[in-house]
Length: 98
Image 1 (cartoon, rainbow, N blue to C red):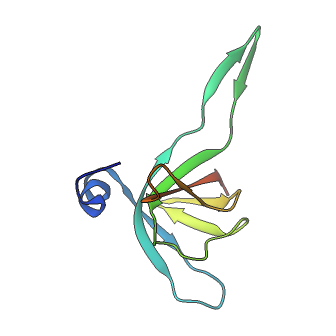
Image 2 (cartoon, helix red, strand yellow):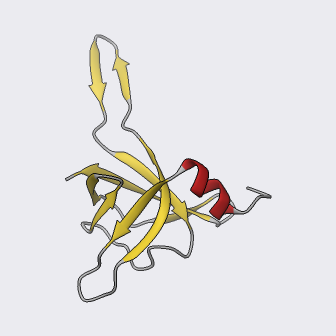
């Protein structure tokens, strides 16, 4: 997906992500949060309350559904198991503000 170094990309564009697993050492990385969407369905306005976090594969190893992470100054709950995307160099996970 990227010919460039992902660490450089996330350093320029990302925010710090911190995860403190129970019984384990704190893990940190840089990630991008895609904010929830707002869209119209016929006459109704729908707001999705789930955001998506993208981060480099190999980081936040063991992150799981219902864990909590800190992105910048905002605390989020993980809503699903992280998944690899595209060429496998990136992970995506749905999150919502805690």
